[in-house]
Image 1 (cartoon, rainbow, N blue to C red):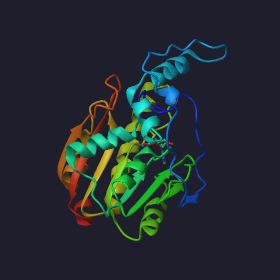
Image 2: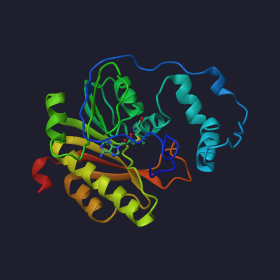
Image 3: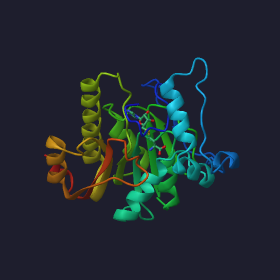
Image 4: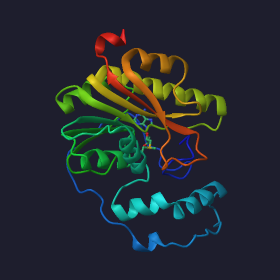
Length: 255
Ligand SMILES: C[S@@+](CC[C@H](N)C(=O)[O-])C[C@H]1O[C@@H](n2cnc3c(N)ncnc32)[C@H](O)[C@@H]1O
């Protein structure tokens, strides 16, 4: 993953793209390991064969209050608190909504949307996601041509919200990675324009300067309000922030 705010150690968990899998029901992972909630700072010894970047990731995870909170409150990722805090700030999630979550593995944002009594939650990721009761989870590339129609068919209509915590797998080459990240957010915005209903909103993780240039122009042309916000759960050393575009003007504005 590109982002040092990621929930996985660098280089782990890369999934194959292509195949599509549907999951409709299953248990939400509950509870947490009380031992993991220890208050003391945990130091991790560099084990043989473990890269120092993995050691740093492990040490940070063990000492991160949001990791501990997620384990105790039954969320699959610390990322869940980013959506919770975005919602606290902008009052986005309301009961009965149809919500599309782009890049949903392992499922923290899906859990938050369900907790807010969404009527339909469709999550899509290149990676397989353990089932979550009440959500439809697709293992698919959201940028594939057929993805918007697939998602709309699963939801039974246009979405009230498209939320994106997408992070691309990276090459280590700074310029290439930056282009990949920008392209991914732009694709997510176009996905939103194709699937949202008028009045709907789009939330997306963006990097560095936030939504800029063509992306910002696109959002301003199609939404009544565009804001940026970095939730407390987003690590201060991370270049990520979030763009929130509210009041979709409808398909004609997308021209
Ligand atoms: C930071 S994680 C999302 C965490 C999630 N919001 C949560 O709360 O658990 C970003 C995800 O984006 C996914 N992703 C990246 N490119 C994708 C693509 N083209 N289509 C679908 N998912 C993609 C990755 O596989 C990864 O699981």
